[in-house]
Length: 133
Image (cartoon, rainbow, N blue to C red; front, top):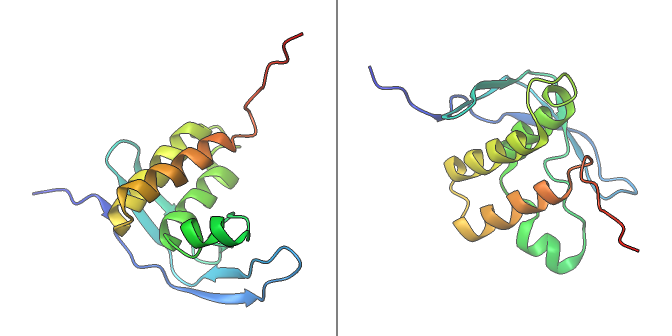
């Protein structure tokens, strides 16, 4: 029996709030979204979970390059950083790696995956920037 990695279910969501002052509508998953990572195993975002599908700033060029893409991957990543990282089940870096793997399964081009994954890594709230005197 061959194991198939990637998305095991389809993304099914409904909009629950229009874009507000932050410029992002919110969506509620109607069914579980299951992703089988080759390195990290099964991740299931439960039905009812609310996502915005992207934390990309709504700046024209940035949004044009990275916004409104990889919705299923974004839902997996949002769940990882909001639930699994805080409970200690994974690190921010691992969540970023899962995001990259999920985008590959969604068919996101390599150049865009690389930029988006590295933007997520750079946004790690645990990053500490040293001040040099």
